[in-house]
Amino acid sequence: MSPTGMLRNMRNPRKETLTFIAVSLAVSWTMAVLFITGGEKSVWLMRWMMCVPGIVGLACSWFFRREPPSAVGFSFPGWKWWFLGLALPLAYGAVIAPLAYAIRFATGDASFITYQPELLKGPFGVTGVATVPVMILLFWALTVTWWLAAASVRWRWVEKLGAKLPERWRWLRYGLAALVWGPVVGFGVPSELGEEVGWRGTLVRWWMHRPALAAAITMPVWAAFHLPLIFSSTQRGHVGQNVTFLVSIAVAAVVFAQLYMASRSIWPPALFHISWNIINPLLFGSVYNGRPGLFGGQVWVFNGEGVFGLVLHGLVAVWLFRHWKRSARSTESAVLPESSATPA
Image 1 (cartoon, one colour):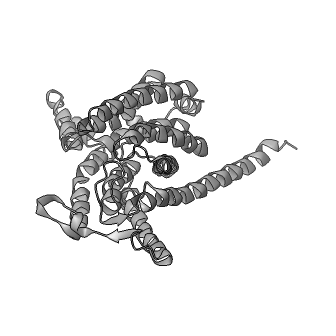
Image 2 (tube, rainbow, N blue to C red):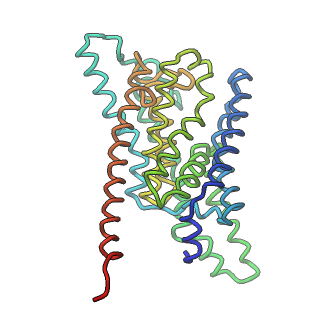
Image 3 (cartoon, rainbow, N blue to C red):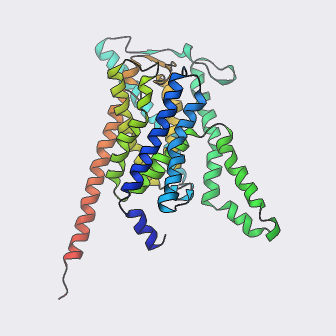
């Protein structure tokens, strides 16, 4: 990146930030209202609503900064970050389930968490506890389409093909691009990816020269994005649960921001997002439509988007803010002696 580009990216992006947030929330809230007032039947409307931040983010990046979509960071970040994005929801589940059973044992409340595999129904006629591994393995298999897109950017497959073809055949490279990127949307609207392109690939990226501030900005904004959902049939009228849900979303934004800033790629937070949206409700029930999970009971307490999720994400968020604060101090102490030095 040129020095001019670096200065542009490190400036205070206040105007584009406010524009991006205002447009994203206005459009997404309108779509959410249409979904709720329409009887919550048009699932496709919600899937497209999740894409709104990404579409608006790409538009604002070009309008205000002349940044191409590639600025978001679509390159394959390495297997460590790839598997971290996929596995994090399982790690949360491995903490939540034993903790919930520990509380059940300590309180003697057998209804706090219950094991209900008979309520699970998966693809191919699979039922019961077998639904969990089948759903996870099927999901992991489908993420190969995302890997192909990420790998094509990392190793420049399209550009290399174009360079090797004769001039009159170079248009074929666009066919390769379509083959690689087509499946990303071919299995349905890439909602989680679209959302991450907006909140992390745009908003966090604009402020990532100040990591703590980047994460802090996205906390209330991401919660606000989910605000209409507390008026859905599943959540309406449960004020305590509504507050817990929104705060858990806010603190989770810090973890997502760190995944993006540390990997410099949109794929880890996007994988975490889509993996979370599959594994958390599969294990602990859905807070969006009330569909049962492997465990039932006080779902709003032990769910990853309930009290337990708030606490776990909150602990990670506190650690990250302390880490960023220490890093900022270390940077200042390293710079100050140099700047204060005077020639002999």
